[in-house]
Amino acid sequence: MTTIQDAFGARAVRGALINTKVPLALAFQFNPIQITFDKKPNYEIDNVPGFDAPIVTWTSGGPKFISFDLLFDRTQGSVDSNLVKVVSPLVGTLGVEAVLESFIRQRGRLIDQISGKETNQPPPDCLFVFGVRWWKCKLLTAPINEILFNGLLVPERCSVPIKLVVLEEGTSNRINKRMRASLAAQESTLGLASTLLTQVI
Figure: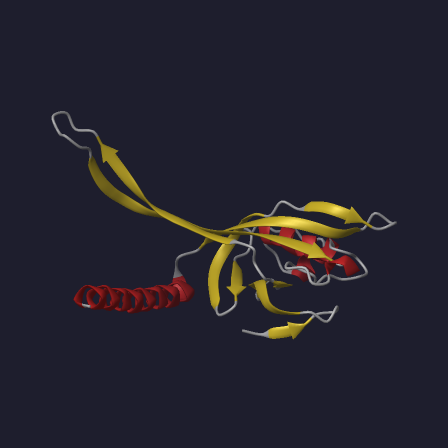
């Protein structure tokens, strides 16, 4: 977990969306008001004639989604904000917006895109880093709402609701599964011990 000093002197932990192969990187100071993790299994519910209750059968695991809101602000008014404050003073939030859009559009090396070469690769993966945790994802949606402009109509503030779908595969998924199993076992053991101790006392 890295603590950095931003241009206004405030201190915050950095989160990031990263792809080192393209390369793409969007670092942000992130003190979340809320971050939502959503995963649910898929069940088939059969209403069988003559039975008092339906038969519930697990069919598959559903996708895991991560969603949160970001605010990018390059104005002095962003000092002490709980959200994002790191953008270029020359182009406002346009650079941030370009990175986000590049995670959604077809993939290609940035140097090739700048030179005008066509690509038919799928959008790139992104590594979502949040403190000591990370997930390999695809950026599903990132609608950009520009809400403040300078005299040249360059956007200086924008809000972006982010929605990621986790790619539950590969090395990062194996690490997350082991960590989840370890934490669940530890928490369950402590919870069981606390319950038994309370009953004994």
